[in-house]
Amino acid sequence: MVYTLVVHLYAKDDPECISKLTAKLVEASQIYSKDKETLSWLVMQDHKDPRAFTIVERYEQESSQKYHLENPYWKTFDPYVLPLLEKPMDLRRANELDTSG
Image (tube, rainbow, N blue to C red; front, side):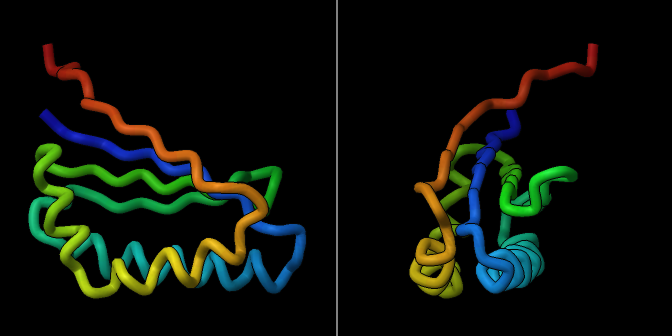
């Protein structure tokens, strides 16, 4: 069963914050996508509100997050991102439903 995290982020109303957040999320996706047992680590920006971002993290199973959290890059992510946000991250955890049949 695929374990998924969906994280919504909302940047401060400042073009520099939006630009920095965009760059950091792209960088994070490139790094985290290579973690063991990570199926995908996708980042998106709302098509109407450039301050709204979504991260979708897909792992083979819930325990797969350990590889993500052990990545040294993880320690740099929150300290960089949090000051760029207007409000706290909204993180949701889910198990993907089997839709194969």
